[in-house]
Image (cartoon, rainbow, N blue to C red; front, side, top):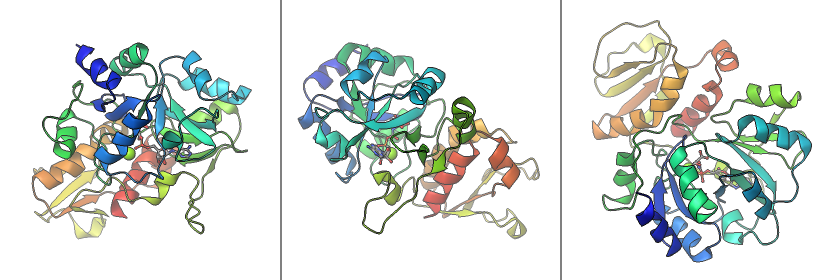
Length: 311
Ligand code: TXA
Ligand code: MG
């Protein structure tokens, strides 16, 4: 079943494939021409570097030769899975992948199909398979919406997590969280028994810690906003996303997650896109209280993606 996609990759083409987080837009990490196509297809600025996807710990050795003990411990705990490490890169890593930075982002995805694919063709670089600025795709239909019906895509239904991987810069001390995601801050701190800090978006010299931080992301056409509870849930032009158990109106444009934050993460980007399909003007999302942010592993990533969609 993968044969066709393997052949495309080997002939310098890009394809979409599933990971456990979101669909990726992949090219061979060894093929500069193919990697360049990723930027063209997505309309992505070339100063925004890409994540290398591997399928064994051994594959990492081609990209870095500095894996400190604490980092290895994190890899043992969370790989394969939704945690991306920013590491010092080996000189031979292509500049088009790293946007000329001295570091490279690497992750080992857990989806069986991505593992199979990488096993057979070698490391694959991939951003999310959306057009630049759109929400990341969690279904094959989303990829088709952005890249066209005939775009080559390994279809595997909905992705499990629904938000992108956590990006952790382990070249800094303390480690810096560049993007919250599928693995939470707490889960990381519990393993390394140390604090991590949030990377600053330092735009003064146009060079944020993680270049992706400076771009608007995840934005549907509809206006995304935090719900002001006192406004009620009465606007027919608005899709309401409610995560607490407080409200119980039954209406088509109100989605209740009933404190299931994994489900909310799983469906968030599809909700954004469905608001556009239904031509709704707004998406209003119930704000997150501090205790939820502290106790729910996916809450920080949810708030991050929603805040970015709000802009
Ligand atoms: O879950 C995911 O991570 C998905 C799936 C396909 O693996 N991929 C993904 O890739 O979300 P992308 O390109 O949409 O986001 C990668 C993020 C960007 O914010 C980018 O700036 C950052 O990682 N990044 C990549 N290389 C970096 C580096 N060397 N230093 C700092 N940030 C880096
Ligand atoms: Mg992306």
